[in-house]
Length: 113
Length: 115
Image 1 (cartoon, rainbow over the protein chains, first blue to last red):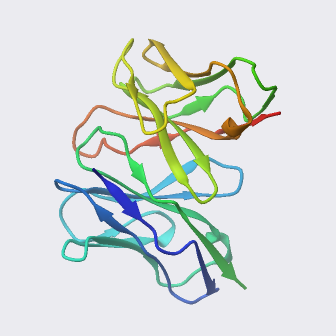
Image 2: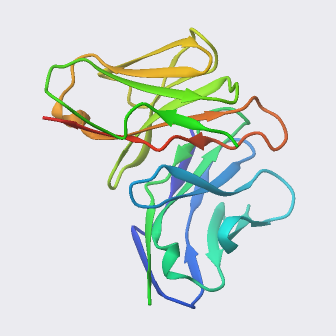
C-alpha cells in the first residue's frame, strides 16, 4: 500500500530565509510524487511533480523539490520565502499513472515578515 | 485550462437529509475522485470512477454513494447526513494516462456543515 508522511504539522520561517517542507513516502513500484498547495478557502493547486528524470524538480512560484530514492524523500524547498507562501502544503504519491493519489496530512507553512 | 467545478462552495444541511454534491469537469477526463479534507487528517479518498457507470470505493466510503451517469459529471451522495460528515469535500479529475498527463486537478471544494 502507498503512504506519505509529512512529519511536521507546522513550519515557521522568516521572510527571505530558505524554507523546507519535508515528505517521505512508501510505494511498491516506481513513485509518482506531487506537491500541492492550498490557500485559505481555496481548492488544491498543483505545484510540481516528479515522474522520472532529474532528481531536482522545479515548479510554480519558485518552489523546487528533490527526489531522493535511497531516503524515500521528496522535500519541498524554496531559496527565499515570501509572506504570500503561507499556506497548507500537501505531498502526495501514486504508483502508476491514473490510480488515486494518496496524500499526506499536510504541513502548514507560516512565513513571518 | 482544465476546469473542475463544484455545485456549491458552502452548504448547510440537517441530520438525516439526503445531500447531493455535484462535480463537473470540462476536459473529457475519464478519471474522477471524491476526497474529504479534515484538519490533521489530510485528504482521504471516498470514491473514484474510471468511466461512466463505473465506481470504486476508496478508503472511507461508509455513509456515501456516488453516481457517474455522464463522463463530465461525478456526484457524491450522502444518503442520510450525519454530523460526522461535516467536512470540506474536494472533487478531482485526471486525464488518461500518458506522458505529462497525470496531474490531478481539483475543484474549489464544498464546505458542508451538518447540523
